[in-house]
Every structure is written in C-alpha cells, then in structure tokens.
Length: 188
Figure 1: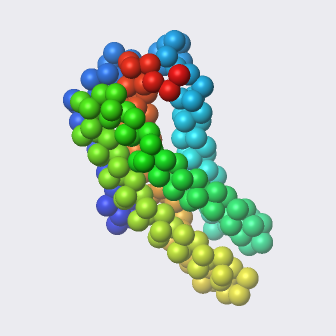
Figure 2 (figure 1 turned 90 degrees about the horizontal axis):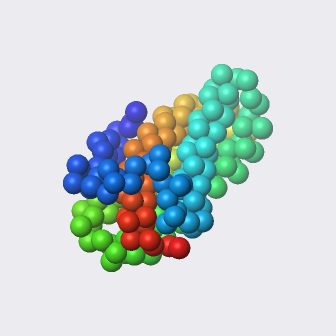
C-alpha cells in the first residue's frame, strides 16, 4: 500500500546488482571485510523495520479497541517520535557521509546511490504526513475520541506505506552498499 505517495516499488536495476552476485547476502557475515560498523548499520535498519511493525500493531490494537486511548497515545508519542527522528538522522548521515564514501570507492554504482537519495526525499514527504496526522490524532485523543479514531485510521494507512517503503528501500540499500563495502574492504 502506498496511499497516494510517490514511492519506488521496483527493485534496483540489474546493473546495480553486479557486486551482489559476487557477495550474496547469505555470505556477508562470514566475509573477513564484514566489520562491526556494517553490522551496526544493518542493525539500525532492523530497528526501523521493527518500529514500523510495532506502530502498525499498536494502531491496529487501538482501532480494534484492545488498547486504551491513554496507553496507545503514550506508546505512539514515544515510539513514533523515535522512528521519525532516527530515520531523518540516519538518512541524513547516509546522504552526507556514507553514500559519498561508497561513491568514492566505486563510482560504477552512483546511479544506484542516486536512486536511494531520491528515496530519502520521498520518505521525507511520507514522514511529514505521518507526523502531521499523528500530532492531530494525539491532540484529539483526549478531547474528541471519535475524531482521534478517524485520524488513527488514516495513520494506519501511512504506517503501512512506511513499512512498504522501508521493505523495498532498506533491502536495496543493503544489497547495494554491503557488497561495495566488502569488495573494497571499507569501514573496517
């Protein structure tokens, strides 16, 4: 589900998967060039996936009325802020530091890095909508629960869009970056 947002759903072009064929995902951890910094970066990606799923599940529990508005609001305020703040920080760091490092090591993959940077811009639009809807819902939750409930329904769709986006983007990002790192023994 992309709920009217302009997000990429197709995978990376074949030519951007050149090193992935040499360094398949299942072999990464055993490679001598797979270092702690890469493990940490992949761990951040896993946390984004988990946070998206957690927020979707929490919203479903609220919409199904198996969670109280108070509990939902407290968890959502905390974890929604963590997801948005950490995604913005992580992607900003990638655009300003990580991607230039990968480009300098192997410019053959610049077209793939440009796709990922465009993804970051598209995600900013989704996160802005998410933040606006979440803030509206949180303001309404103790004042006008039927309206808050409607906003939570909209929010659920946006969370599904974030999850769909992250599934495609993070996998492509990992499958482009990690083979470059391994091939050129970066970040060690």
